[in-house]
Amino acid sequence: MADTITIRTACSEDLHALASLLEELFYIEEDFNIDRERQLTGLNLMLHNTQGRVLVAVADGTVVGMCTGQLLISTAEGGPAVMVEDVVVRRGWRNKGLGSRLMAAIAAWAQEHGATRLQLLADRNNTPAFAFYARLGWKQTRLVCMRSMLEQ
Image (cartoon, rainbow, N blue to C red; front, top):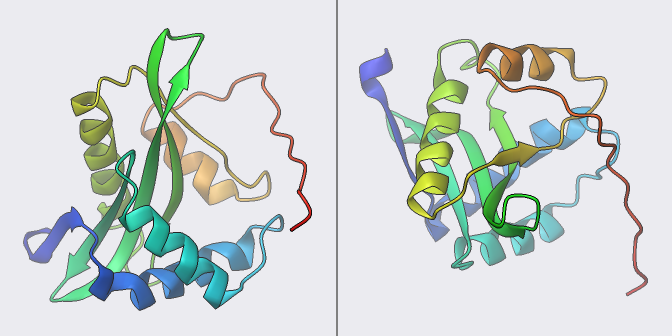
């Protein structure tokens, strides 16, 4: 089956499949709400972001996984780092190596853009995600994520 999987940059034709994947992800992430219109808007912005990348795993013409990354400047690193987000593989396609391939592809993109560090946030209750990232060699830090929502 690994031969039928392609990892590629997402395009506008993938938007609805990507939004469906985000629904699966946000269902388990308590800090985010499923709002298809907002997610479509955000995904469209990501597709046109010259400092970001949206990657998809495609099986027989169907998008079955995704991963996004955005360049930022790290003062600690003295250069670019990449914030990895939206790592999700559709149920039924998990545990087949797609997540690892997506993460390797986003790491390669990050290195091509001079990044020296990848970072991500994971829902503290998503035990399978922590196990997945640990298998890939990721380490937890002592940092805590905080946020403040701005009024629109």
